[in-house]
Length: 148
Image (cartoon, rainbow, N blue to C red; front, side):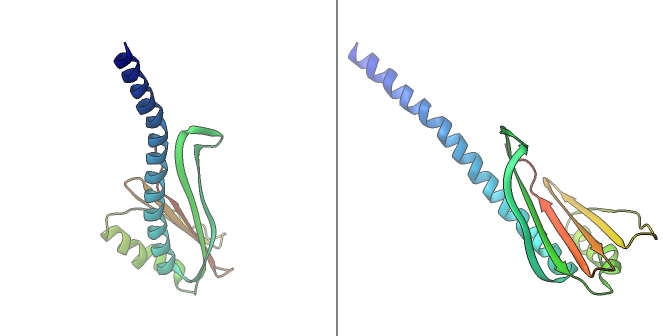
């Protein structure tokens, strides 16, 4: 009888610890994915402009308010750009990332606006660059996708 009780207690301890381990594993996986996503966004930002300023770096719920929905990164960097940035983004920068396996989606250019946007996707990673040609600034942001 004592062995049965001891075995049940041991199983309970093991099972109780599993939930914490799963949560820790989720957090560690989310942090690893976020670190990789930041590297990609920082690389794109360096190609687009100079003087990077991180304006957002947050891990949050995939579905806001639903903690069991997984963990997602929101990461954004602002950079200053020169007069050639918009053309380079749609040309040589997009070509560079396409050669590295990224899917490229360039938004149509509206002559009435002073913005140029290109989006990049590869596996769970998505990022984009939006250049304001009159302001001389670009917002470069991305995510590593939802980690569950």
